[in-house]
Image (spheres, rainbow, N blue to C red):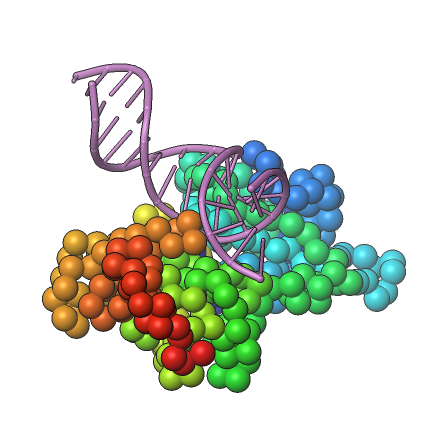
Length: 299
DNA sequence: AGCTCTTCCTGAAAGC
DNA sequence: TGCTTTCAGGAAGAGC
């Protein structure tokens, strides 16, 4: 499932093949995951691809319309979220087409950009130049760029569970279930901890853990759990480095305790019960009869 | 404010 | 064996 490292890997692949190309034609299969399929089919042909970037888990393709008559044409952006099973790849037009391929963007070099998505949880939309700043702003901070001070400010005062906040794209953009669990394990923080009850040291550790985990995952071209492949159809290798994600029942690499899976914030969460101690008073551990035991010493 | 539930969708795996 | 059921999950929206 594509999260920041997977999308970053796809974007790097597309950067090698798309910029400078002109779009000749668009063909669409199922369109229920496309914001405005008519606009897509009308506006893409003739447009030139300037660059490809990542915005959290979104791929953003910067386009300039072909409009020789009207000199200064406004850029627009083809923005793609890969959802759970989305794949973006450039292929030769006569390469075999995998099932569930619903968007074909023909390029001026005999190749085409294809979007394949088994479950169609992905999204495709067009964003005008005038809307791209607002689109970016309603996403949270880039996890690889956020400073410690800003990280603390965004998370440290919240009453929600830390796992829910890590997954909230309006706070941090790009972290999903795999890297949230892996980051919390590295920082030794239980996923159900309330964010504002964490110590400054724990927030610092988490800030660093998120960046280290994401950086390491990008280096290994992401995690291939089921369907994920990059723009060249290649699988990632970070799944072999997972310490907790989908390792429930297996021994913790640090202490040999069995990794557990629980639902936190509606999502399956994997953690080591010994390395990531449960919050006081939370179900699973006996609630203390002494109310003083439930006060938070750290704030 | 933040939680749970539901919806979207398909294929894999479990259940019978 | 072959059918049916269950589950998984990113994000958004409803309702509490």
